[in-house]
Each structure stands twice: as C-alpha cells, then as structure tokens.
Length: 459
Image 1 (cartoon, rainbow, N blue to C red):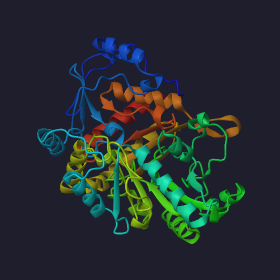
Image 2 (image 1 turned 90 degrees about the vertical axis):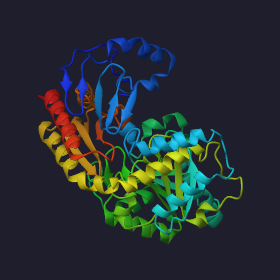
Image 3 (image 1 turned 60 degrees about the vertical axis):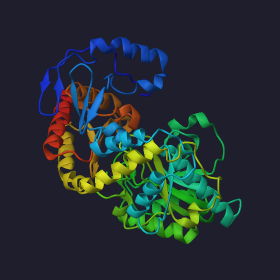
Image 4 (image 1 turned 135 degrees about the horizontal axis):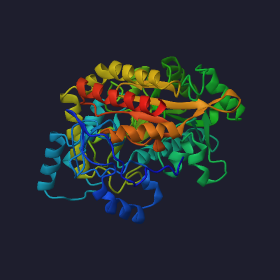
C-alpha cells in the first residue's frame, strides 16, 4: 500500500457546481501535468501520497486551484487549519508582524512569545502551568519522551526508563516518535534492539475487543516489564488511525496506575487539541489531567509551531539553555498561533465542533450503511470521524481494505471535496475532519459526497 499513487492521467469527471464545490476540468488538470511531473522528478516518492491537485489558495472551508476548480475541504490541511484556511485574524497578525520587520529570535525574549505562552497556560488546566514552544508535533513528542526518561532516571535509577505506548498509535516520523508508535511497519528501519519502548493493546473495542484496564497490566506482565521500571505512558488522546477515545474508566485507571508507580502520563494532543474533539483539549473528556501534553496542528492556523504543556516540576528538569530549539516561538509563527487561538475562542469554534458532532456521526453511519459491509467500523469525536474499510481475510478474519478506501478517496476528490489520502493513515481509513468553523449546510453537503462515493465504488 505504501506505493499507492494517484495516477497522473487526466480523467473526465462530471462537472460540479454547488455553493461549496466547483469542478470544470479533468482531474488532474492537464495544464498542471508539467509541474506535477517536475515535482515527481525532483522530490522523493514519499511526497506522492496526496491527490495531484495543485493548491493555489484557501479561504475558510474552501481550497482552489489556478484553473477555476474549488474543493470543500474536509482535510483541514491534515487537521492544521482549525480556524479555517486564511482566517482574517491570522492574516492580519502575520501582516503586522512582517511590517514590524522579520527577525529571528531563537531563545531571546519577545513580547509575542510571552503572550502566546501565557495564553496556552491559561487555556490548560491549572496543573499544566508551563508551556514550551517548538516547531513540529514530532518535536513536541520527542521532548516529552526526553522529559519522561529524565524524570524516571532521576527518581528510579537506570532501570526506570521504559516508555509504554499503544498498538496502532502514531506519534510522528522521527526516531523516538516512531519507537513510541504502534506500527511495526513504520519502524523496521530502526532495527532490532532494546530501546526501552513497549506497546500494549489500545482499548478501541475493534482491534482490541476487551476494553478493560486489566489488558494493560497483563500486556506488561507478558512482556516482562516491571511496573516500577516504567517512566512514562504515552497515548494519543484519540487514536489518529480511528478517531477513537479510550473509555473514560480506562483513562482514569491509567492515571491512577501512573500515580501509583511514579510514571508520567502523556496525552498526545497533536491532533486532538484546540477544539477538534468539542473540548479545548481532548483529555478533558476523561476527567483526568496528564503530566505532559505535546500539541501541534490546530494550534497555529497553518504555520509551523507546536508546544509542550506540562507540570512545572517536570518541565523544569533541564537548566537554562539545555532544552531549546532553533525555531522555537518564531515570531511570525507565534503571532499566527496567538491570533488563531483567539479566533477559535472568540467565534465559539469549540462549541461548534461539539454541536456538529451528531451530524458528522450520522453522516458517517450513512456511509457505513451504504458500504454493503465494506466499512467495518465508524468512530466519531467532535469534528473528526474515521471510516475503516475492511474485507474478509483468511480463516474468517477481518482485514483492512486499502483498495476500496483509495477508490472512495479518489472519487470524493473528483467530486470536489478534499480529503487527505488513506495512504497516510494506515491505508484503509478515510478521515473526515473539516475546519472547526464549518457550518451545518457545508458539513451535510460534504457528507452527501462521501456517501455517494461509497455507493458508487461498492455498487
């Protein structure tokens, strides 16, 4: 599945003209082929995962190419543009910062960094009283892993170094993040070794039917991991491959377990944070507060910025100059992030995500009903839903169906609705995650497109 590419062969598609979608050309657009072919020649194959649509401008829930086509965006640029593409408040903040003169501050103090850090601390629960600004989600995850290891080694000696994570988890593409990830296929390049990372089943009720916390403890025992040797447990607040929160009782039991054995609890909010789940932070659904929270994606309105939120006693483990990043709190990115968070707050986008969740869930269920059994599981949290395409395997087992998922994705894009490719989320899952400012009419229009594509592919 890793080699799946959208062919660079223009296909005649039905013209589309609605309030949100406009398709007037073949897909891909013939005039775009020289540029697309040049990119395929100059860039690695890994950059060929998305539809060959040349993005030229974005506004709110819409993406346009240079050829008159417009897509209703249910990708949010891979969950980044929470406040919509090109939010006016974010654009003004960037323009004002440019007019002040573009400068790079590294770790030197700036007013915008101070205001952004204060805003993040104010949004978080009181226990998370420190914010560290970085660049990417993976960098934020790596920082949390480093802090957890340091915390464990200082308090429990050389053996307290084990990081526990979950099967099917995704935490980024750097080495530490992929060691913590739950896909063996993504970390084969690292090679064998005792790196101090172990995985346990995620209680999703799908791949792991037993959602009790006893499974967590049994999995550690089976792998010969002593609870006292665990320095940290990291989980996506909802798993990105399925949009599934863990059961509340499980999360609360996990918090108690970490407290009992002196391990840090880390909830990866890179996808879930800043309103995506209908709460400012996804972990609020659990009624617990983690020790560390890596954030990214929806934080900045499209600029490269991430953050770690954490308890002061953990965040202060390293001294001055010992935990820094070259582009930490870049003034342009920090200004965009501050404006983005203010827009989400002022315009009630978190409440909008919660209000629209039942409509998104209903639409996902309609797609499942139309799939003739090819969608084996649907999950929905706030304004993110996941459609898991499955098929019968050997011995009656249910396995992923990447081919059907890709064909549905292709038809959806050709009908004027933008998704990110299932190639990037395990191959058999289609994610639906529009900007948080989407209205009911646009959401329903997009869901109708998905249902029609499923019907066309499986019909």
